[in-house]
Length: 378
Image (cartoon, rainbow, N blue to C red; front, side):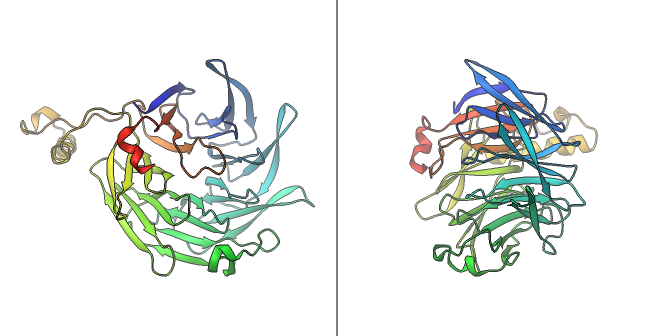
């Protein structure tokens, strides 16, 4: 079993983030508050409650170097929290949004952060010391619907986004006076702020979680059509692959190495995807689940079950005695997993430990070190 610890923090968790040393976790219990827990011996103790938002907190990110927490909410506001003595003090962020803020992530150098919103807009925020607040520059007129995910490239300039218009896009976020020109970033450092580098039209349904590989050479994102997409050589001529699976859609993804990705979502159990020696990606297996069945039988059973429900029939009365039962949903998690976060030291290119949180109110810590069949991909 890959799971090493399971913690029940609330009835429902919308998002979570870890402190730099992983001794504390910040989470939203599906409310307008952020609770910070510290592990004391074998128990988690709530030590802080961040109260500033007045609607559900939809995104949290805890910076690894500067120890700052950024939060965004459906109330269209964002705050950067700095720890002063024993208290967390909020700093105002000028977002200029007229719809909910949905997701947030610090840039690798932590001099900026990106906020995706329901206003079809991405806010790139940076600090203004004269006024002691964070201001934003907006990327507009590109997305046709809500921005559901943001992911920073390791070069601190490129930003990938996903949207419910079904597209994944990559933008330049170079801000004069905040970023520096770097020849190692290639042509992306010459692009102006908000310039679209590429638009990927691989999905015909909502697109959700998006992540870059540790090297920045590969981009992965997921669609609501039970597919995951991998894109190499992001630019004018990208190389794309899509992997379809017969299970429920994913909500978020995480690269644990250049050749392995963990996906989490509505199936309540993390899914492992890996690339072989020729670079072809495929689904490997579920984590935290022992039971397996043939995919064709599983697909037929799911279809017949849904068909029976549509016409008010019981599952046993459909008349498919030869079809095996559907795969039991979930395992350790009992509801949709909506977030996955790495547990690794700064600078590590491989992630052997990570955490997941879901609508069941649990945070589960997973360890891949003892998974012999997966070690070849780490």
